[in-house]
Amino acid sequence: MVHLAGHMIVLILAFFSGDAFSSSPVMQRNRVGDVKIPFKNHLISTSYMLKTRTISRDRVNTIQSNMALHMSSILSMRGGGGTLSTMVTCLASTPSSLFHSCLGGLALSTVLLKFFLNFQPSSITTSDASSSSKLVKVEKPNSIKSLQLRFLIVFWLLRCADWLQGPYFYEVYATKVFHGQPASLTLISQLFLTGFASTALLGPFVGRATDVYGRKRGTLAFALLYSLGAASTKSPLLGMLLLGRVLSGIGTSLLFSAPESWLVGEALQYEKGGDYLGETFGLAYAGDSLVAILAGQMAGAAAGIRGPSGPFELSIGFLGIGALLASFLWKENVAEKTVSSKNPSIADAWTVVRSDKKILLAGAVQSLFEAAMYIFVLQWPPAISKAISTAFGSSAATPYGAVFSCFMASCLLGSTIFGKLTQAGVSTESFCSIMLTLATVAMGLASWASSSSASILTNAWTQPLSILVASFFAFEACVGMYFPSIGTLRSKYIPDSHRSVIMNIFGIPLNAMVVGVFLSIKRLGVHGALLCSTTALTLATLSMFTLSRIVGDQKGDKEHNIK
Image (cartoon, rainbow, N blue to C red; front, side, top):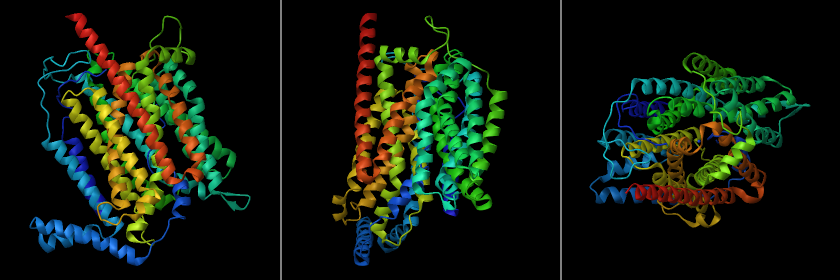
C-alpha cells in the first residue's frame, strides 16, 4: 500500500502539473462501447487459475538465476557492480515486487513525458487546413475552461462509481445462496451475460431517447438506473439480481453515450468550441486512469468494512453526487432536428451510417477495438497467473491489484502521449492508425506468449512472463490513447442529430463478439481468445488506415480545388 501511495502521488502530480485548465494552443479536431475494463470478471479467471499448470522447483530456480545473472552482467558492463545488481534482483524477486517496480517505472515515464517533452507549436491547426497552415498560440477562452471543468468533475465522479463496482462483481454474487446452495460459476456467468445482452439489445433505443429528450436527462437516468442496479446486490432474490443486471446494462449504454454527446453538443454552441474537444477527451481519460486506481483502493476498504456489497453501496454515493452536480452545472441539450424527421429514429440513424463511409469506418474501429479490449479484460488474469506460476512457482500468488494499477498507469501514459501529439498538431487519423498497429502487434505477441509453444523459453528477457507483461502494458497504453482518439473522431464524423443512437448501434456487434468468445471460451482457451482479440485489432487497423486514406484524399481534392 505504501508503494502504491507513493506512485499515486507521482502520477497525480504529473497529471495536474500541466496545462489542464490554463492557456493552450488550440487544435481543431472535429466514442459507444460498454467499457468496464479490468477486474470486471473474476468469474473467468477463477476457473482458469484452478487449471494453472505447475513446474518443478529446479526450473524455477534456473529461471530466477538466469534473470539475476542477466541483470548482473548488464550492470557490470556499465559499471553498476554488485550493489545495483543485488537491488535489481530484489526488485524482481517476487511477483508483487516485480509489478510494484513496473508501476514505479511507468509513473516515472509519465512524469518525464509530462515535464520534459513539451511541444510548443505557434499555430492553430484546423481539421480542414493544409499542413502548411501557420500555427498561432491563443489563450483558451474562459467559457471553454468552464465547460471542461463542469464536464470533467461530473464525468470523473460517474466513472468512479462505475470503477468501484468492478473488483467485487464476482464476489458479491458468489456470496448469494439459492435453495440452500451457493451461487454457481454458471449462474454468475449468466448474470454477467444478462448485463451485456441488455446493453446490446436496448442500447439503440436508449440512445434514441437520449437524443430526443436530452443528454443531461440521459446522464441523470444513468445515475438512477446504475444506483438501482447497485442496490439490487443486497437482495437475496434471483429475480431481483437479474433485474439489477438489466438496469446496469441499460445504464452502461447511457454512461458511454449521454455524457459525451452532451459535451460535444455543448461545445459546438461556443465559437470554436469544437477546437478543444480533443484536449478535453485527453484530460477526461487521463484522469479516468487515476480515478480507476483510487476507486480500486476505496473498493477494497469498503469491502473490508461492509463486505462484498460495500463497494456497490459506496458507488451509489458517488452517483448521487455526480447527478446532483450535473443537475446544477449542466444545461440541457438535445439532438438537432433533421429535415426528414421531427425526431431522430433508429432507422434514420442507420441510413445516416450507410450513407457516409467515414462514419461506418469509425464505427468499425470502435466495435472491433473495444471487443478486443473486452476479450483482453476477460483473459488477462488467467494469462498472467499462468505466466507467474511458470516464472516463480505454482505457489506464487498473483498480485492482481498491483497488475491492475500498472495497467491504469499504462493508460495514463497513453493518454499523456495523445495529449502531446495533439499539442504537436498530429492528425488524429494518422496517429490512430499507428496506435492500432502497435496494439495489434502487442496483442499478437501476448497471444503467442500464452500458447504452449512459448513455454520452452527460459531466458530472462524472453520467457512468457516478460513478453506478456511488455505486451499487456503496451496494449493498455494503446487503450489510453484510443479513448480520447475515438471521442475526437466521433465528434468529427457523427452528426449531432443522431449522435447517441449511432454510438449505441455500434455497441451491438461489439457485445455480440464478446459474448460469442465468452460462450466459446472452453474450446478457445486463453490463447484462442487472445488470438480472436488480435484478429479484431487487425481488422480495426485496416479500417482506420482506410478512413485515413479517405480523409487524406478528400483533403487533397479540396486543396486542389482551392488552387
